[in-house]
Amino acid sequence: MKNWFPDISGLSPSQLKIADFIERNPEEMLFMTEQEIADRLGTSIATVSRFWRAVGHENAKAFKLKLRESSDSTPAVKLEKTISRLDASSLPAKMLEQAKHHLQDTMEKNRPDELEEAARLMASARRVYVHAPGPSLSLGELLSYRLSRFGMSVRIMAGSGHELLESLAHVEREDVVLLFSFTRMLPETEVILDCVSRVQNAAIMITDREDFRYGTPAQISFFVSRGDMGEFHSMVTPLLLIEQLILSMGMLNKEKVLGKLDYLGELRTRYADKLPRGKA
Image 1 (cartoon, rainbow, N blue to C red):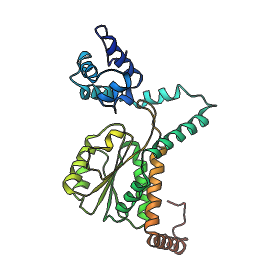
Image 2: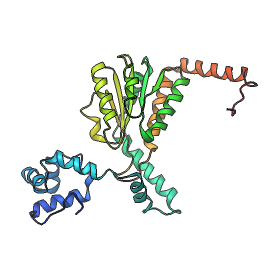
Image 3: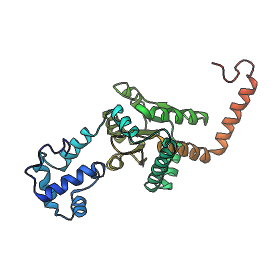
């Protein structure tokens, strides 16, 4: 067993069965209740409840916290783990197959009406604030670029630290906050959600953790499948979701959006000599 169970010598056969299940299915276990684990393994919930203390943890919650911490691999470890299963000749086919799996999983766990509702909220907002930390920054910038073309007011918030408060100080009830929350719940995410709760404005969360979709003040939460915990994570599904949101908002305000883009085209023609495309 891994360092989750440093000493299994004193475990009963039933407890060893639970430990083996967790060893083989760590990510799935994170989202299961004690009753679900008991049902899967054909044991009692009392046996599952006693298991945590037998392996040195107060309860299931404490063990899951340790499991998440130990599975929070470095980028190098994640990439190495993924690359080790690939070779140059199989890479295109493997990535395409994985992308299809992620897209199918994402589609099954989100509803079309949620996409429509999110688009309506953002399209009618006074301003859209976007929190896109780490690798999700490119998605936030794409969203900002496209929506700004539509004539919408979009602000990218600081990814981390106290500078985030500079943006949160201006969030009003008529605004929408869109936040990406991948892998783990950041302190910045917790602060944003607390502010959303107090201001009572709409929030939309995009996450690769199903458990993050519940128990937060976010009005809508989308799940995006990105790969197993501890491996290189794909950005295919969150990118597709962002593009769907952009097009949905364009459809809602079709006349306004087309008018803005037509005017942009006129400006490009008028000033083509002074500001040719492709020049800095």
